Amino acid sequence: MWLTSALAHGGVMRVQPGQLIPVFSLIALGDRPFFMPPQPTMLVGHRSVAPTMPFRSGKLLADDELALQPVIRIDVVEDPALLEAARLGRTALEIPGLKKPSTVFSVPAKIVLAPIGWPKKSYVLYQHIFGRGNSYPDDGYFYVGVTTRSWQTRWNEHRRAINSGSPLRFHRRFLEELESHRITYIHHKVMAVTTDIEALYATEEFLVKGHWHDERRLNMIPGGKEGLRYLRQNGMLGRHIVPSPDERDRLVLKWMRDNPRKGVPAPWVSEKWKDDAWATAQICGREARLSVEQVAAIRHLSNNHTIAEIADRIGALNTSQVQRVIEGKTYSRVQT
Image (cartoon, rainbow, N blue to C red; front, side, top):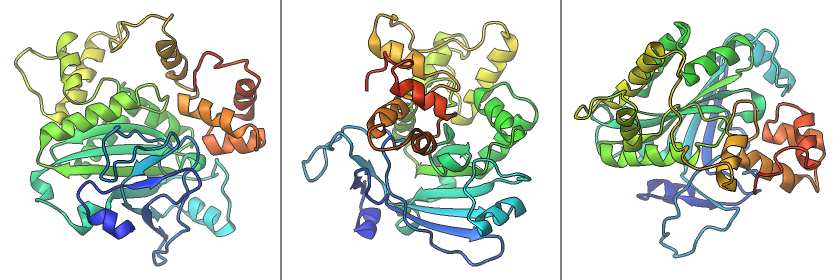
């Protein structure tokens, strides 16, 4: 079933909490041969955005159901501290002595098993995800982007910007987490490779907007053509200039350096606080706050799990954060 879906155009698999996620995973610990870990199961609050599109079966997704692409994922672990933790079976959030996070790469299986076109002449839609143990491998901080080159080339540019002290949210947060030893993995997630830039822009716009109120989202402006409109409306881009996907960060960076006191204009803020949906976005959209999905997961899990178990499963900052949600002291206005 996995292979049939992987080879089909637009093939996806329906997954509900407790069912297996359709990922074929390989892990290399040091110089040992690759091995296959147990297949992960979907948990409540799994981070995903999916369009409400018609399926061939004609059956709509259930409220707790996701349509996921079959994926191939490889994880290479080289750091001695991580290797020792793996040998001892330790799953602690903090790994003393960690210097090099594991490198994770994933790609839709179809791109590997039945590629269409030539990657070097295509555009790449990607995510860079990073975090520590309890968010591995998909639920950490993330940045969505499109590049005209390989994701490796774009990542090397991001790393140079991070090391040079770039104020962009993605670069600043990555450096903060790295210096605080809170990164145990870096996940490079290729999501699509195509020559159709219009389709890729539309997908990027959909993904960024769908995750806009997720506290882990590190994009500072909308994606796709909505992002181009945003740049023009705020004077960061000339009316008739069409930048390449890789140039958008440079335009935002220039604005921030030219206007250090203004910051980046916030998109999509015409709604008022009396709007519950917008208020929820503000409450859950700030750094170190719980996302709407995390709040929903806390409420769902509170009947059958301990506070410590919930905090670990959803990646909360601490058990007190979970306790306050359960007691209704925080996030009471967030509708789930």
